[in-house]
Length: 141
Image (cartoon, rainbow, N blue to C red; front, top):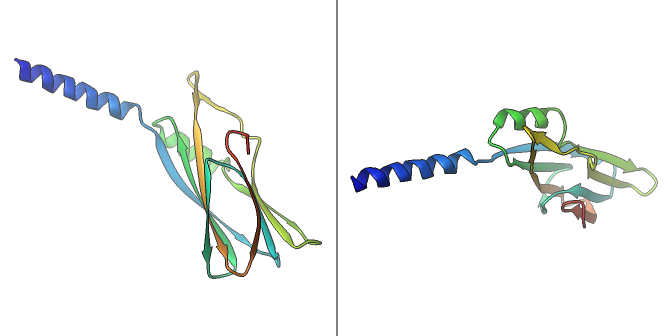
């Protein structure tokens, strides 16, 4: 009798643990340098990791995690361009700026706020000077 109770409790505990999940997806973006000599990174994220690479392009790997266990929702918001980065270049100073959209609205699904966590890995060419990294976490530097 006690064994059945323990098995039932274990089953309920496992079911509860899987029902409060989250979903993660990795996105990739590539940027050309367009004769830039310096690069500024201004993103809203939990963290940014910079790595050097050979070549002439900047590769940005974005890891997006949302607090709801809904893969279709994550696919929808990713495909709508919500996490795309914006590239601007200043020809006079030859600086390239990669920045995130800072006007993303809060996602509310069925009355609950969906928490989004962004992490970036940026592969920067060795030939380019890295000038600045302004990473905002929850809107604060």
